[in-house]
Image 1 (cartoon, rainbow, N blue to C red):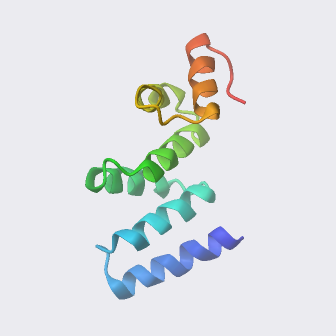
Image 2: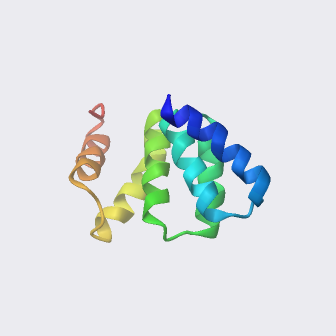
Length: 105
C-alpha cells in the first residue's frame, strides 16, 4: 500500500515541479515497478535513454521484464551485467537458468 500511495504522491509532485525532474521520475518508476504498474516499463525506458549508465534503472528494468515474464529480453541485459562484473548472484543464476530453459526462481 505504501508504494501505491507513493505513486499518487509522486504523480502529484510531478505536476508541481515539472515532468523534467529526474529524481522524482526515478522515484515514480521505482514505486510503479513495486506495484507492478504496467506504466513502469515505459517510464524506465524513457529514463534509461536519459541515464543509460544508471544501474538502479537497469535493475528496475530487469524487475519489470521479469514481472511481465519477458525473459528473452532479460538475457542481453544480464549478459552485459555479468561481463561488466556488476551482476548479483541472483542475476547470474537467472541468466544460467534462462540459458538452460529452466524457470526462474
